[in-house]
Image (cartoon, rainbow, N blue to C red; front, side):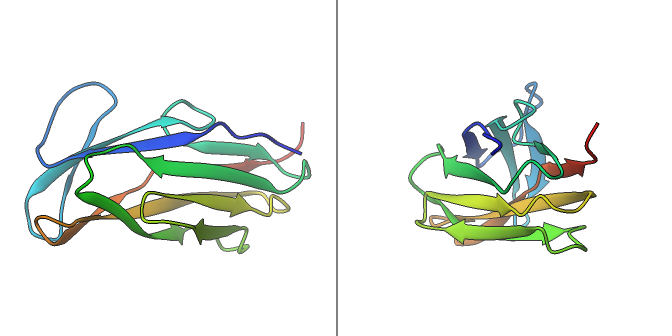
Length: 131
């Protein structure tokens, strides 16, 4: 069974050009920045080889307490390989059935409880064919 490293997500309520950070517009039109660490690529991305068993990728938010994980959505998951198991407002996990080749993205939806808005944070997921 695959073993995916822990994934951490940090979010800030200002833009930055620092390496590893992505700027994104929140639902309140303010610019936020986020950074993933961990995962298979060190930046929150997931890469699995099809047929090596179901994989679970734990994700936790390491940002200021004003930020909560409120949902996770998937794009490009035509084979329905990915599901979200949100077990708290600060953590959850992505479960990958890992039976079909596909390139997808997961988007962690974060709520800024102070500004009452949402921020979308989305690294890639890749299920690659066996060698």
